[in-house]
Length: 264
Ligand SMILES: NC(=O)C1=CN([C@@H]2O[C@H](COP(=O)(O)OP(=O)(O)OC[C@H]3O[C@@H](n4cnc5c(N)ncnc54)[C@H](OP(=O)(O)O)[C@@H]3O)[C@@H](O)[C@H]2O)C=CC1
Ligand SMILES: O=C(O)[C@@H]1CCC=N1
Image (cartoon, rainbow, N blue to C red; front, top):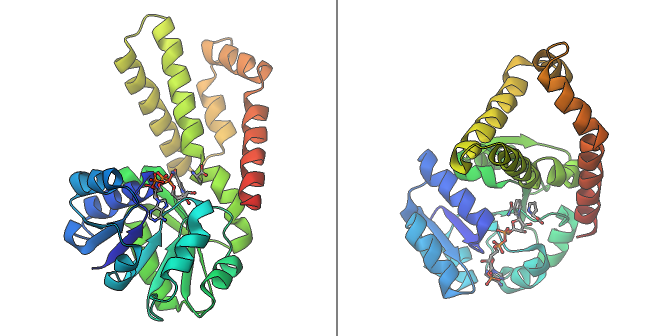
């Protein structure tokens, strides 16, 4: 088995979907463990992977392990698997707040650790993942981990002190973007557009705008100005968004998100 997941919830499912869709791994090369039968059956049906109720079986069978349980379960799961983790295995973590130092202390032995923060757009191959490693991971092994992470989107190696910021700017931010899309669609529905059509229009506008930022290299403010015709419709919307505090709401929400990540 090439890849093993402990915890087969939302984020693990998004990664499974991404790596299988990319062709990097076949479903039969992936194994996942979860507490409940329902959780295991869901990923077995959706992705065709092997499943087990035994976390240790995942560690015994897979080359690379992704710890995909909630942060509050990291301590107990590591205590359960630490004796079966082999020196050559790479353990990838995806939990906010769990530092390399804290993780190493839980394992209590030399383990190759790659700390990451992915996001659910991994499911459609458009993830954004940040990664950092501990001293036992060689350059070649880091490249191997990056190959897995880039199978479902972009990956960037960052200094560990940035990992809490990454949580708010890309780990959690899909949720704010979905809220924005939902709100835009609600407004369009209020003005008479059928809901399904409203989601298409709003989501495609967000997708295209994000592509413009990534592909033109222009400042987002300049791209915004290009939409605002003098005396036109857009500047009126911009005026109201400023009055209602959109920018400040986003900044304050992200500060709260980063602060929580630091405390986890
Ligand atoms: N969702 C996201 O967008 C992102 C999540 N993450 C991180 O990914 C991790 C998982 O989050 P997410 O997928 O959202 O959470 P989920 O609750 O969807 O998935 C976690 C899964 O782990 C199972 N689980 C709990 N305890 C154990 C255990 N002891 N052994 C095996 N499986 C167990 C849970 O089962 P049960 O439901 O029965 O408890 C659940 O199916 C977290 O650390 C989160 O911070 C990182 C980036 C983005
Ligand atoms: O909400 C959470 O805690 C996780 C981490 C980043 C996205 N979801």
